Length: 234
Ligand code: VGL
Ligand code: ZN
Image (tube, rainbow, N blue to C red; front, side, top):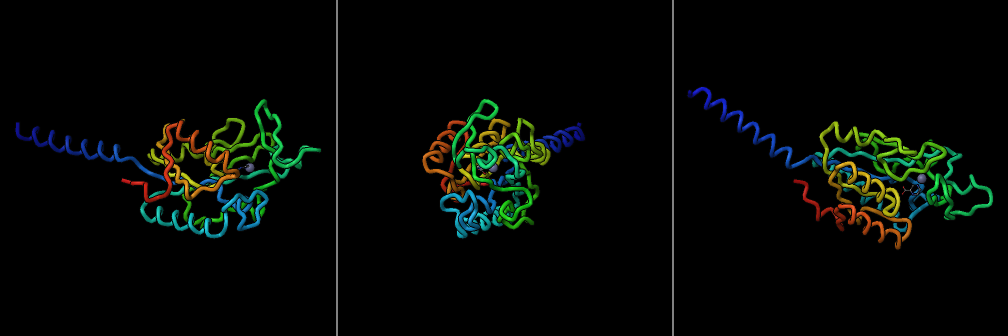
């Protein structure tokens, strides 16, 4: 019958449109820990090499451009209490960057940084661009480099927020390549996202561990590109 033929055609077309939309995927940006304490610009306690004002402005320009292209921006924020066990100052006799065992794992002892509600814990990129900010590292006994967790294996709101919006592709960059970017990218891949890390929008604590981080991310199935020109958002 003619009428059924038309219904099949329309249903088939609608199905094709939704399949192709699903195949194209939905991108979002995860901006990792671009906070004062990690920059030399703000004389941060853990200012990493190359994190000058020009770097932060370059990141802000990239974030604005991606937002203008329709991507939602999710930001992570390292957010420690003053008595946090990742701070060397909370371990009498220990020096900055010494490594101890914490919960059976290696723990770098950092200078105190990103203490809750201090000026240098603020994210240096225009916060009005963000859809969501997820904080991590707020549990005194647990350090946490991944934005998908808050510490001690507890998830942050990031995964569910992204999945609720149908996001499946993540464009990731920020500080530090060898700690929070690496950990957030690898967890993103483990949680089923297709992750792309943009190298020239990242800065690392140490060149050696940053090089290793790029290898580890690549091994985990993450695409590491030099700059945004290599990313095709369609
Ligand atoms: C980070 C060291 C300590 C980071 C956070 O954001 O990469 N690094 N806390
Ligand atoms: Zn930290």
